[in-house]
Amino acid sequence: MQDAIYKQLIESGQSFPEITDVIYDANQMEKLMLNSVDVVTIGFDTIWDKKIFNFHYKFLREGFDVLEKLIEERCLRIRLIVETAPENIEFINSIKYYEIRHLDNIRTNFGIMDQRAYMLWVFHEDDQRPEQAFFSNSLSLVKKQQMLFDKIWKLGIPLKEKNKQLENEQTSEFHKMLANFVDARTEIMTFLDHSKKELLILSSIKMLDYFADDDLFWLKLSVLYRKGVLIKLLTDGYNRSLIYQLNKITKEVSRKIHDHFQMGYSTKLGSIDEFVLITDNKEALELTYADLNQYRISFLNDKNHVLVQEILFEKYWNEVQSLSSISTS
Image (cartoon, rainbow, N blue to C red; front, side):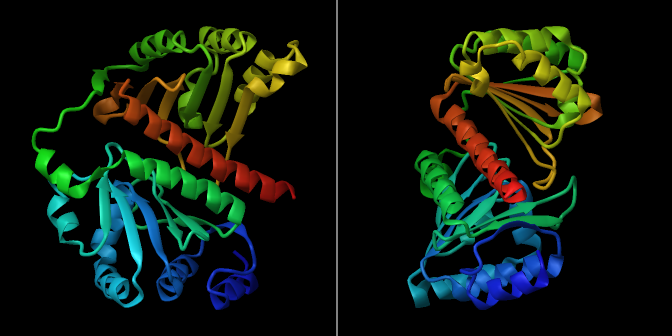
C-alpha cells in the first residue's frame, strides 16, 4: 500500500480513502491492526484458523488484556469463531468477555471492525508471522463478508456447549489416507458424478496440474457444463495448461450457458494447499497433503459442515473478485 494512502487511512480511522489492497509491509500491517484497536467503537467479528490463533497466542497475548479493558470501557462486542481442541481449550476459556463459538476444520481467517473495515492475514507455508494482509473498507465487500460471518456464526457451537462435548464429540466426516495420487484421482472421479446443479472447486494450481493431461477429468467437467451444471473454479494461480483445458470446454457451446463456467484466481491472497469439491449444497470432498507423500481425503455430508465449506468458498470468491475489479478499474 502506498505510504500516502496508508497515512490517510490511519488518520481517518480507516474510513478514507475507500480502498481494497494487499499489504506487504510488516510495519503497515502491525500499525493498521493497532489502529483498529484505537478506533473501534462497535466491535470485532473474527474467524481464526490455527495459524492466526498461534500467531496471537505466541506474539499478541497482551492484546487480549487491552481489548478486555476496552470491552468494558466502550461496551464493545467481540465475536470470535475458532476451532477448539484439547491443546488450546484452556487458553480459549481464559479469554474474558468475548463471545466465542467453535467450528471444525477452519482453514481461513478474517476480521471485520465496526462492520466497515475487513482484514485477512496471509501466511506462507510454515511461517509463524503473516507475510501479507488483505485490507478493504469497501462497503460493498465488507457487507458481503459480514453476511457470510453472520451465517457462519449461526452454525458455530457456543463455547460452553463445546466444553461439555469436546472429549466425546462425534463427527459425520469420513477420512481415508491414500498412498498416492492415483487412488485420490479415483475417488475424485466418482465424486464428480454426484453433481446435478452446482459444482464448486477450490484448488491450488499445483494440485490442478496433476490433472493437466487427464482427459477424463476435463471430459467429466465438460459433460457437466453441457448439462447446465454451474461450475465455479477458484485457484491461486493459472498456467497455459489450465487455460487450454478451460477454453476447450467452453468453446462451441451456446452463449446461454457461457456463464455456467466461472473461474477466479489470485496470486495475492497466499497459496491454497488443498483440493475441495462441493456438490449441490449436499456433499463435499477435501484432499490435502499428509506426511510421507501421502494424501488425506475427507468426505462430508453433514448439512452444516457442507454449508460452512460453501460459505468459505464464497468468502474467497468475494475477495478474488474484489481484487480483480480493482486491478481492471
